[in-house]
Length: 529
Image (cartoon, rainbow, N blue to C red; front, side, top):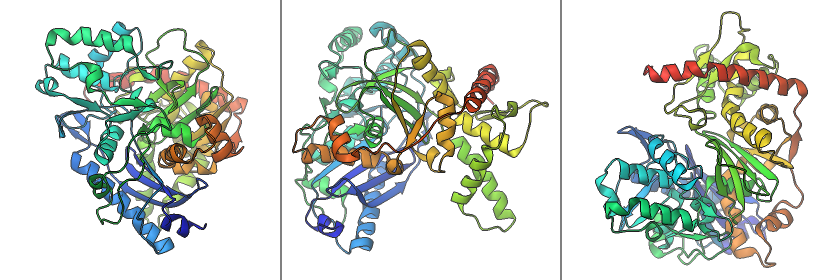
């Protein structure tokens, strides 16, 4: 069948992902190819010192994104979406959404918040396991330490993806990958680590709350399991026009890390991927556990429950994009027509002509705090000395390097200290939009070949659509890695760039300058400037 027939027969599959700056919907056909898209731009707000998105912004964003998808389908195919084979919902991982009934007790606290340092440190010691600042367990324990009144009333705690799935289906469930960012998951049981749950309950028992942790967390599901169906109310929440029918299967909701792994075919052991956009993170699927906990490395799972070492960086391209925006404004002042793809392309490619070590220039892209380097707050800084080689190519190269510098610091622990082996790393996200540039920079940073697929731009919305397809179209009963290898990607490993010795040495020199200059960044934070 052609795409129009796929849509009218109800065989298309919908994936929706709530990213940090954009909500995206992708409709795929029965061969897993994108056939329509919709999107909605949104932005987090700093309210009372915490990063959040309002409930109104969440649902308005979903409405607008789905409406944009309908518009694309009508423009391309002249039909309405009335039925679907399956739906999947994904969102930025971690954070804190506590509920009593349907009431959200405090505004959504996102992954970007770094106010949970005391809680994360105490829990890491209690569990003998690295508990990151942004994980849900850190947020709820910090709220307990703060004496926040709402904690006693919690009857459900979930993530953004879990919240949306619950409202669409009535099911309080979560995919194992997203669940592993609430509290650690045992890769053997593929459920919350029972020992850690017991320790947490004992820790907070003197508070006399009327709940236990296991009672308020979502049920954990692995990829392919039944996660419910779209209700009549859910159909109206998704499609305000009233065309979409209820009863559509909805796959387990996942986090953006899991959908990134799926979209890059990196759920098999010894594979990895790097997502580089507003934030960045690398995911390396492990053959065995690490030798010891490390505060730079988060342990999560793939959507089918395999152990993953994750290096998560709160900042990536936002500061870089802001500098590119200045060049756009300069062009506008000159009366020169602006094509942002051309602006990015010219600046990025010119950066590759600069010195391999950026001529001594250093960029800190910290819009928000960066836990990997011990910075609780963000202070974007550009640092140079009078003797550095200050030109446009080095300036842009320093910002490109700065966008993945923290990622390198974390991955050096994995590759150099833990001797983790990886056969293939795939990149996806906005950093790779200008062909070959971000890929070359990342290859130099990680001293590893980096592949980028043509589908990399589809991102997590495509990834969750693939998980929805896996849930309903896996007639052969394949494991998720085999399904992706044999059904979705069929040998496509993308275009690979191998790092040059000069680029690797240059990035190593840059990172030494970067580490030395961290004292400047920390001084700016300490002095509130």
